[in-house]
Image (cartoon, rainbow, N blue to C red; front, top):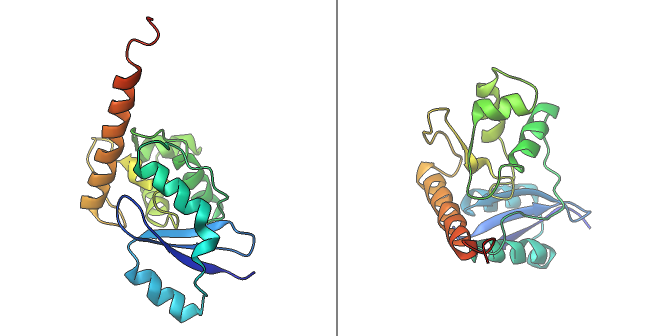
Length: 174
């Protein structure tokens, strides 16, 4: 089973994803135009069925019932990039972290710009939540899908996070 791609739906629009021969997700991008050109250039076959679990988890996320993805991931990158991407998966749904905080977490304090570069090279959008990384002053900075999409993603998560908090308010007091 060779590398294949699939086109999936998400709350943010169509996505294109790739999985390797073991079924591990290697890439996922929101929007398909750029990805279709890549798939054609590489001769990758389309196999949407290979992505049933990814599609299912994306749908759960879109309904606000999934806050953390549980998928086999195999992004390709340097050791530093992999460390950053792993740290991103630990940022809770509905929350954000600064580039500097991620740099400290991966053992490279003062390397916020390097974290920004690794963040920008994240090949698995949304699943590895690079959209949750913001500037130290709380500003939205760089995002491969554009700042309007980043803002939309953060607002979506914040809305569902607050709704869940309201749902369970007072439960401990009962």
